[in-house]
Length: 215
Image 1 (cartoon, rainbow, N blue to C red):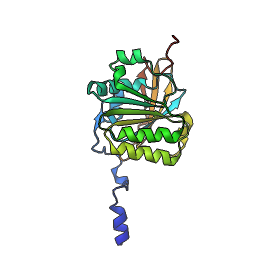
Image 2: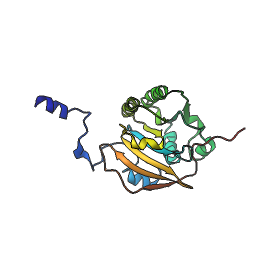
Image 3: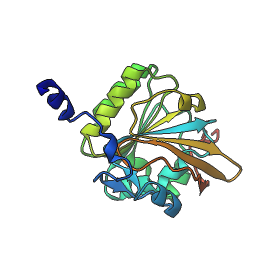
């Protein structure tokens, strides 16, 4: 019985009775009322958030820009790790994310990207980290989760559509799909909080990550 009590008291054990109640987690408002309602206040800080969908470059960062602008207003850096295209800086700047607050990290291997995220997520001057990974292993995902919990940043991991069918230790998983002028979001996992929401959320798209025009 002593071993069982020790297991039940372990801080890493998630208790099912917590379903339906929101943990006391600090959040950053998303800037979109329907999304804030679905997220119970905004993007959680110190949690790993997976945004799963594709194709990349059709506005998937648009849902984050109001929150990134808030980070920049607080003099916090926004870090992009291995994005699939060059950020459209003029559009970002118009929405309140100045170039000097953006740090772009390019890597060739998953391990390098994960290591970079581990370093910046633990830094107090970082507001949000966005990383794009195609096929991370479960060990890499666990490292990202631990790094996110160790800091107060908002940590976003972009993955392709096929990842939705794969298990993941991420705290929050959201499936997104690009349409003509909006993104369709579906929350299908939330660890230790409210049940997944069945009703999709639609967010208008204006600016996102896309290739900069040739000079």
